[in-house]
Image (cartoon, rainbow, N blue to C red):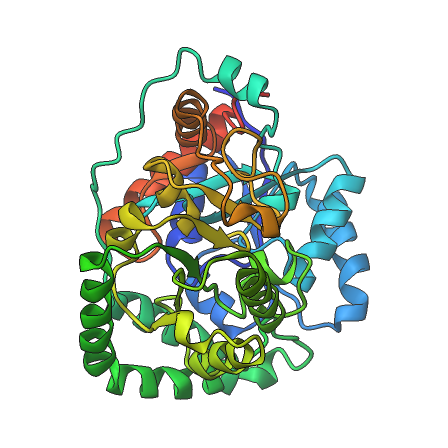
Length: 407
């Protein structure tokens, strides 16, 4: 048996996943530690091996370095490597030669989980050289994309509440903890209440607009918005906010496309509603004189739109992978592991709109084979069977040290 323990878990998703991974590791004879930063962390661990950190953020760097040394940590496991506490921990881990493993939502949706050394996007070690991808994937099997596990929005919401409500109301147990998000959780819940109350109406309107698009003969491009709070946008792109990205995309579209062409802007399905993206988009569209050429979707089915779209522009959304799978030309504005010559537009955004840069099918297939085999595991964060599968698969991968297998 191979291993890289002892293991230290920091914050994970608001899910039982990290605790269940630790159960498997300890069943295999490995030592697991956990540092809780707030009451939510305590609730989702509920097992031995935890330490509560109640100090200030300024003292966190010294604390984590001493913890690494005292417990002889070999592997650090976390979710969201760009969170301030995690970023400092990753820096300290690299100073001590400790392996860093980031666990995130899967690139392959809906029932995959990402397990990757160092982190995502600009932190990823995934090869960007097409020749390396083709060589590494040469003998790999095609991924089975048939859905195996399901999870519901209700389950995700309940887990989220179970984590953030204690973290908010029991703040005095960890008085110096600094929340990593843009919005305080209670404000996000306020936004979600409004979204839930209007969900049926918004979905009905979006489906009608979507059907009109699909039955038209016009030419249109897709621009799926990301979450304002997403570290993919905040840490792995040149933009300080989604508003900046929207402004750039609309300006380029206004100057480099024909008057009959449309841009379909779609909200993220998990957007909290605290910002009216419709107002933001149309205000910027008005500044460029293209209000009539913007189609705004607050709902609908992105996968249904992709086959008929002329192209997709994105900061670095994983939604682009669905487009690449069916050969949709794509322009990436931030850092993404799939932004590779031969897969995506490598020229300027202005040139993208009428380029003919479709994904190379051989490279595309090799990319997905390598992606699935090397940094993806089946399972999810919130469904009982999906969590159980992900926990088992990740633990086996950790013990066998099958991380980023092309290395």
